[in-house]
Image (cartoon, rainbow, N blue to C red; front, side):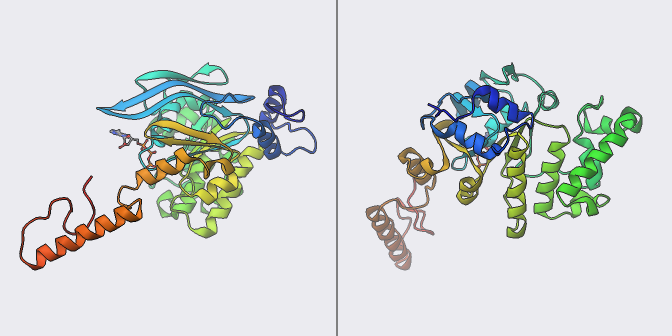
Length: 340
Ligand SMILES: Nc1ncnc2c1ncn2[C@@H]1O[C@H](COP(=O)(O)OP(=O)(O)OP(=O)(O)O)[C@@H](O)[C@H]1O
C-alpha cells in the first residue's frame, strides 16, 4: 500500500482544486499515489474520481463492454488501451452519457452518472472528446468554443446559437474562449471556419472546447490519431498540463510510446473486459495483454509452423490456379490467408 509520503485522499483531493503542496508537482503526486498499488484488475485506488461497477453493454449478441469494477485515480493520467473492438469507445460513450448500458452503475465523486444526458454529465464535470473530431466545420473556431461553454440555458447546439439566450454570458465566455485559444495557439484562427483547420488543429480545438466547461475529468478519445509529428508534442504537452492543473485525465490511445510517455496508470481492455491494470512499465510484460494483442491480429501467423502451413496452402492455391483447377479449400485463394 502507499508509502508514508504517498498522498492521502485529502491531499490528492486538494490538488484537484489546483492546490498542490509546495514543491510537489501534481505529476509526482499522481505517480506516488499509484506507486504501491497492486497491478490487479479492479484494484482500489487511494482516491478514485470515477468508480465503475458491473457495467455491461451488448449489441445484439456481441458484448461490447463488460467491466466488473474499475476505479480511476483522481489527478492522474490513465491510459485506456486495447486492440480494435475492445470496447474502449463504448465505455467512453457510457461514462459520458452518450450511450446507455444494459446493466451497471458508475459514479463521479460518489455521484451516480448513470442515465444522465451528456450535457448533464458535463455540468457535473466530466467531459470528453471524440475519436473523429466533432468540430462543426461551418462554424468558426470561436463559435465552436462558445458551444462548449457551460451554464448556458440552451443546451442544444441550435438553441445555444440563438443570441438572446446566451447574450448575458457571451462576453465572459468569449474572453474565456480567447484565453484558451491563445493557450492552444489557435487564437489567430478564431474567425476561420473549423473546417479549414488541419486534423491536429481540430484535435487542439476539441480539447480547448472541452475545457470551456471547467471540467474535473477530461476523457480524450485518441487525441493523437491523425496528428502530424510537429503537433504531437504540443498535444502531449497540453494533456500533461491538464494533470498539472489538477484534472483527472482518461485517454484512449493506440500508440504505445504516447501511452508510456504520459500515463500514470494504464488500463487494458480486450473483448469488452478489463484484462490488466498497472503502471505503463507493467503492461508490456503482461502475458494476457500480449495474448490479447496477438489474438486481435488474425491475419498475422502466430508461429513458424502456422506460417509454413499458410505458405504451403498459398503455394497449393497458386499451383491449382496454374493448372486450371478449381477452388482450394482452406485458403482464400488470393492472399494465401487461412480462413478462420
Ligand atoms: N452502435 C453499435 N452497434 C453495433 N456494434 C457496435 C456499436 N458500437 C460498437 N459496436 C461494437 O462493439 C465492439 C466494441 O467497439 P468499440 O468501438 O467500443 O471498440 P474500441 O476498443 O473503441 O475499438 P477501436 O480501437 O477500433 O476504436 C466492436 O465489436 C464494435 O463493432
